[in-house]
Length: 404
Picture 1 (cartoon, helix red, strand yellow):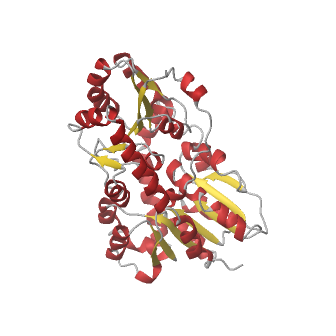
Picture 2: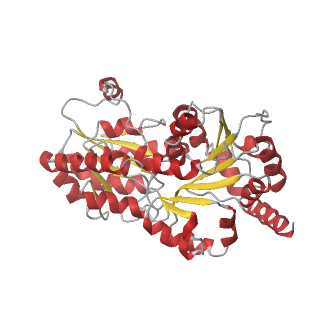
Picture 3: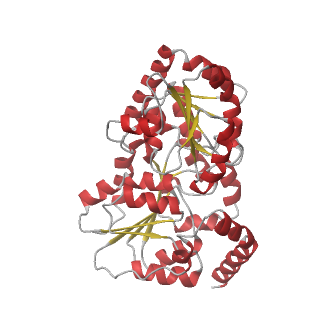
């Protein structure tokens, strides 16, 4: 009781501390407008007599990962009630499109005990599946108190997170089993005192995200004003300050080559307007200001440069999606949240980690050497084929946690 009270008090103090920033984001950046009420005052959920499997992923990447488990669940337990929660508006909106074969999609409420207690009572999950983590004390405590079991899938942990979680080891006692992406993450969880019997390395669920169906992309190219003979680079999932760093490096090539076009895809939609203001200096660059088309951009690209890796503090993003499509993939040195993935892509020869200073000569080498691009692309496709199977391995581990 005391621990719960102190936790609620700490959470409330953090909310007060960050309230000015939240208000700036709300009024001036358009963030949280769709989600804030749902997270403070979750709507009533109809009681169901079906056994409930609750899947939770923070945002878009985690939602994509959990989508790979849904077919296995539906096949094995067609009578189950599949309940999905997410935190971000991007994750929620994409969940509606990516996983229509679930029974309900909601925002995860804020982790205050009085809100979570009511929410969990309405759902009464037999199993809570946390994608990549997102450990909330009151959520996990309440699920366990009501007899539910908890699994972490696609689990990972950065060195930075390891240092932080050393102070909160008790959180992991709520988890019945961890399905981890790779051995390096297993070693980090072991350092937190978690029993080896509670951990299995099952691989990265994102490796099993299906390729988009082949479609005629000529209309998409027309929308972007791309012409026959254009060379295309996609800058995917870029962050604040990163766009200009990358565009400055690419601009000398564009000045020499009028057929070199760049598709710029910022990570967060609330930044679209600000990023658009940069494009006056880069006329051969197209801002992609809608969600859900990044894979299309990769498909029509000669090269992909993945953001979140050239500025410190993000830790990198998914470099596998473009590589498995056969697109040579470049990324920066700040990939500390994607250690196993970085190792897989670099060792396979499907992509390269490089500094900002090395970007220009590398682009020159790849853009004007089709044989080298083809070689890297073929290695990416082969890497993607070999890496599949994590969803089935993960499902086999967590299926035994269900009582029906």
